[in-house]
Image 1 (tube, helix red, strand yellow):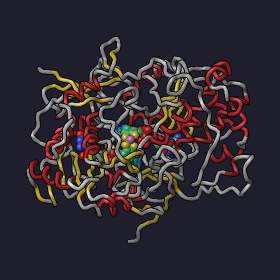
Image 2 (cartoon, helix red, strand yellow):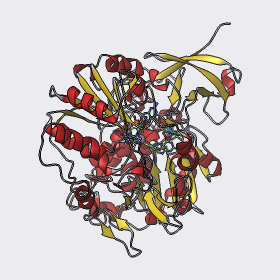
Image 3 (cartoon, helix red, strand yellow):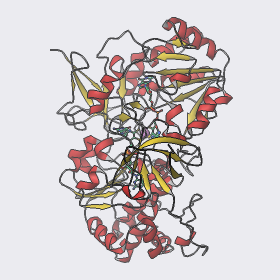
Length: 600
Ligand SMILES: Nc1nc2c(c(=O)[nH]1)N[C@H]1C(S)=C(S)[C@@H](COP(=O)(O)OP(=O)(O)OC[C@H]3O[C@@H](n4cnc5c(=O)[nH]c(N)nc54)[C@H](O)[C@@H]3O)O[C@H]1N2
Ligand SMILES: Nc1nc2c(c(=O)[nH]1)N[C@H]1C(S)=C(S)[C@@H](COP(=O)(O)OP(=O)(O)OC[C@H]3O[C@@H](n4cnc5c(=O)[nH]c(N)nc54)[C@H](O)[C@@H]3O)O[C@H]1N2
Ligand SMILES: [Mo]
């Protein structure tokens, strides 16, 4: 039997290596692989396999040949100044080859993120650079704090690394991992910044900070202490939804031991998301958790760190979060579903509908393909050559074509077609680009390719680009959504406006879908105390829009939180077109929700 290997291109921390036996209905993990430890998830084994592909290109709803469709794409690009909006449907590096085309055709790209951008900005403020904490350091920790990350759903291959550790979960939802944890802090949403500040304050109060490490690498720690003292303990603990007893218990797990924080995107789906990661990092610094074995903060890292990217171009850019699509006569959507994945769908769809030439380049029908004038089927990751990096670990995989298929066109061939059609010079052969990525990698002792940015213990020498700077503590917090002034002493004593009477939206990932790919659903999870009956339809609204969903009761929620996963049809009608204070990120959870019963 012929065994071939590739890697999963789906947007997830794990980036698993895949062993293919003959055809893609027979795939398996690689037991020897350090990150994916032999198992593959049901998204690959079931959902992707069952998903119906777009097989035939279309123009204005009529099926056409690939040749005709690509001619139409060329015509759409004839007037210069098109926009490319790229999603994260495939995480292979070759997705970005289309940047070269946009540069040559005077096109526009996007900046910012729907995903992890706010947190990343907060990390960069403190550490200067966002390095990934290697998995083997997580395996050496005594305590693992899972902070706003739903590991069993979104990052299942992390499980062997946290096996047997003291587990703390900080999440407004009692997730599966929270149920197995030594301690679950079921806090109010959007209070993680204050939690990190309070914990820091208590650590100083009991003199548990790592003074020796701070003197060497974070010498402003006393100023940080003063900053934490501006915060009033009692109202803040109340605001977070915790008390001194719980704090004392949590501190027992953090003090004088090896601690890793696994922070997810959940803490930063808000305008203040950067401050939250900065505060969590500041807490970690105070405990001396950087640059030491078995310690650190693991968030979504910069997978391209240390690489020279052959697809880096100097194009104009517009926001990926509040994209003004209607300003462009031609918009190419590649590997994404903005009509459904971007916040404020009503605005997005109106804008997309005003675009003269909307081109959808993807695998499956979705809310964006339905609106497109030209539909170009893509090849899936089993059908083309690529290289996979990860934001969760340092292993790099060569992705091989393991299936021959007549369907679709690869991103490279799409780019090549247009280079040729416009008589542009300078596109290198595909293998040259693949090799450019691979030749920059190192190899570990077992022969696995690893990123050039790999360091066994990141920040061991210090912070910043050159590793010679100090850690910078958070010293400022701006919140325009909630007036938190009463929580600090030095500021105004305005009446406490922390209204908790409307509902918070929690919109996480689902185990049946990868963002809007694969299974979609139409339910909202509510706490039984809200008084709605299981199975009834309710109207859920925010100031941006409303949707009707079926009630599923869930006792694992706080009473003031509702959960609508991001594979729910119409979810982003509820979410706001705002950009985070730092990091140009979407703020999916910065919204309050109302529920109404539907008459009849
Ligand atoms: N099965 C599956 N896996 C995926 C994906 C998928 O769609 N499906 N998507 C992939 C992608 S694109 C990404 S970015 C990653 C993201 O992976 P995660 O970082 O795990 O993101 P979420 O699923 O949004 O889970 C966030 C968690 O944060 C909690 N949370 C919500 N609000 C708050 C808050 O204010 N404070 C705290 N402390 N917690 C909060 C939620 O209850 C949830 O448990 O997952 C990847 N993996
Ligand atoms: N409410 C809410 N909204 C969210 C989130 C949330 O947690 N809650 N999460 C946000 C996050 S973290 C992210 S990362 C975004 C993701 O949002 P998007 O980047 O828009 O991702 P998807 O919606 O999954 O769309 C991916 C599309 O890529 C196409 N595709 C897959 N493989 C390939 C390929 O090889 N080539 C090409 N050309 N196309 C391909 C598929 O057809 C699929 O429809 O969503 C964000 N939206
Ligand atoms: Mo994401």
